[in-house]
Image (cartoon, rainbow, N blue to C red):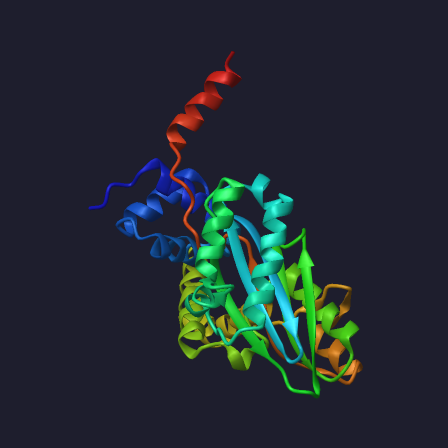
Length: 302
């Protein structure tokens, strides 16, 4: 049996907004498996979704650079937000983008090995780290290419806390930028339902079915399980999948129409997009949650 620590409870709480006791029960029931604990809470209707912000720890900025039909989207991390606002860091961010977009690099590893004035980009970043006074690292380099009959839509939010580059079929850059702004705001995972992997759909159906059955078991007048599986679950699954797909989302600038309707009205269509938010997927620094609670309680009781 895994040792369920206060920091694990805190992390799960931040991911799901569930109560501390429910989080501890979930972790205990799943032997400390964080992902399984999230599913355990969702199946019982205690948590509807995972808050991505709970996993964000690193500072820095995301950015993009465009050269003709090629765009590069990347993240440059620093240890503190203060340094990310430093002019030297922002200059380095611009320089890194220009170097990568003008190279043949297709990923982070290749980008770090790009030659720059007799040294590689990794060395350039290390030298900048020494000048700026914090560890700086490059991660999540993605290259997007378009055709001549397509257009890029690029958008930065909060100076680069979130960056989106979208590719639309058509030639209206203002429409493409509106789509990029929507992606930044609503964070869809896919362009359409056709892009969702079958295993992800199957897993979501299992979670929704388990939640519906638990809900039904506690109802005053339970329905037959077959009705739950054949009638209720498909509707909830359809709604859940629509929420993570760009084209089926309500357009952020006009919620009365979907993104699909918006781009179709402009005689365009969405090909793909990339969205980066600073620090996604980097584990938080360990903190003593129990000590935090004790300190807050002591302060409150003074």
